[in-house]
Image 1 (cartoon, rainbow, N blue to C red):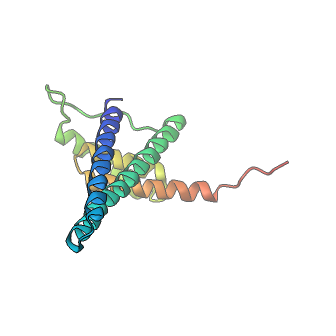
Image 2: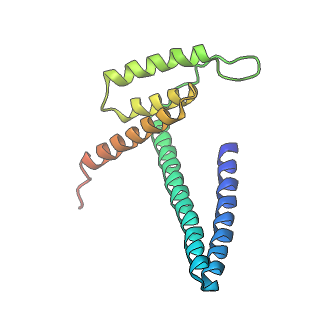
Image 3: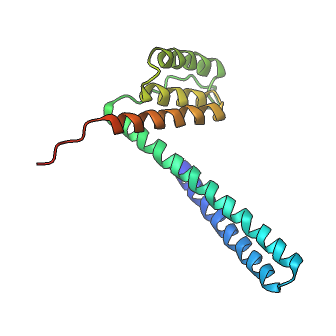
Length: 156
C-alpha cells in the first residue's frame, strides 16, 4: 500500500509540474517573437514527453498488478523465501539462489507467463530492475497471447 501511495503522490507532483511547465510554454508562445515561440514549443514538448512516460509507466504497473492478482487467484504467487539481514534487507546470496531456481523454471517452461512473472520478481529481489522490467513485459505479452488464444465462451 505504501508503494501505491508513493506512486500516486509522485504522479500528482509530476502532473502539477507538467501543468506549470505547459503554462510557461504557452506564455512564451504568446510573446510572439521567434525566439520565445521556439522556446515555448520546446517547453511544451517536455511535459508531453513526461505525460507519455507517466502514462506508459502507469499502464505497465496496472497490468503487472493485474497479472499478480491473476497469479494469486491461481495460488501461484512465489512465496517469500528470501533470507534477510538483521536490518531487514534481502540477503544477496539468498536472492541469487532463488533467482537461479526461477531462471531454471523459466528455461524449462519458456512459454509460461507465470514462470516469467516469478522470474521478474526474482530479478527485482536481486536488484536488477531493468531485467525485472523486461521479464515482466515478456510475461504480459505471453499472458495476452494466452488470453487471446483461449476459446471464448459461446453466446447463447
